[in-house]
Length: 571
Image (tube, rainbow, N blue to C red; front, side, top):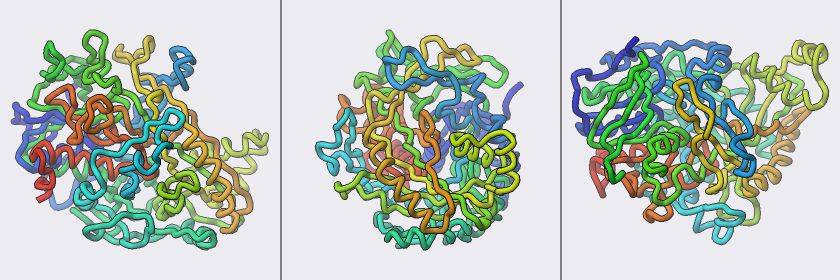
């Protein structure tokens, strides 16, 4: 069996080889190919976007449907944790592992995790790029390693604007009091608000907070040859069946493929980087093809764009003399961040119609004020709901199972309470403190279906995020009460956090002793290898990271084409 090659199949020599086709890989390919670079993209997962390399006024429909069972429980586009698990422990003293399973195992498909994310796309705040300075002595308290980013908000702002147009972001200017300055408007206005947002608006306002339409890469009007959202209710954790969502498969990757300068190989899993004797130059990559055979691919430059866990895993799999490639700093795989999700749910007497709409349309950012040192630093709070039937049952079991509600009583509650229509949630993306003890490495014994060592996550939350959770949860519950909720409770936290926001492991910075990659994404140790996207993040902020992942990747790619003057890439 051979997977269909997309793009210009005649290309046989490449300026850049990109490992991964998600938010960062697609952005890298789009920028490089736009400027005439020949790009090869290798993606381990299958392609559900047939025809995206065909030039047509409207984009071909993907092979997706609104199937909760297939997407969320049968691993259509995620690695099956039986065949491709990860292992987990809290700390080294736990032994080799505490568990084997589905840990931060987000996506394996053309387009990556952004394919089934709901694609809320707020920008990071200007202060998020200089937390080392803002926090002062607290930046290293309790073993944390907060540092300033090597690029500022002002440097990235034109790239943010460019990326918003590339992805197609709806939003409104001037509605978020914490937002940084903008040099231009959003491509399109906000879509219709969900009733759940209107229902909680007065409660949020009564605490002096400002709710606003959350920027989202989802068409509110026809844009870029794709239709407007029809509010089918399957945005959360589902790919879009009509291409209204600005996922990489129908935005960045498609644009790259249509230039004639890009070639995409699905079902091609890179398992090793090949380096010269000194370990300072990558000479090729070894990959497993769809038919199980192995092949070596070469290019002038190589880009790690799988995700922060798989990027680090690949460097360890490519170790020479027992040392991960590019690891003179000792920081490869360290400072893993997952976002400390905080979820509070309220049960209302009246129907909220949470299954009608995009899952979430509004948010507030009043907890995210790093410069206010009188309280913990929180994150954006999204007004959301539980729109799916299976998901609602699992949520209620988690909530009320702790109270002894089970069996016939649980079934009766599901039938009578109609929880899908009566549950409203406030979800805060709490910032993870970067810690060198939170790591990705290789499990010494567990192998995947190809016989390759799996990634092992060592992760334990820091008091920084635990303090924020304890501080803000009572207020979040009070907001629900002020909005008319009959009951309110905090949902159990995942262990590790269940957030799909994975960041860190290849920190970038100017000092090779304290970072893995340079400010332009290139490895300090390896002249033709680049990190990109979320892997580079020194800190996680308190916002959905996809827009910043794509923006940083675009910045890195522009720096490859125009060293020292990346802004020229936007012209």
